[in-house]
Image 1 (cartoon, rainbow, N blue to C red):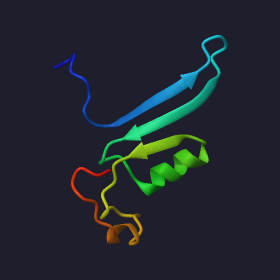
Image 2: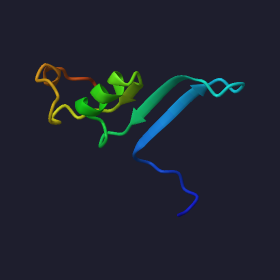
Image 3: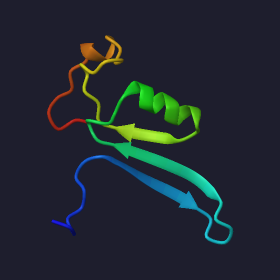
Length: 75
């Protein structure tokens, strides 16, 4: 369906100054398939903020995170 919005992928929100086009802030939101420590590290190096859902068994995720269990409905 051509007019249906994309459910998956990477979305960005940019705060800019309309008078001169200066970019003040960029936030990147990723879905569960695109979230990775390597991506977030690169975004951080370029001074971008990032947020996304992560799978605890994904390659590169510390074993420390796998210890925690979150109740259903808590984020």
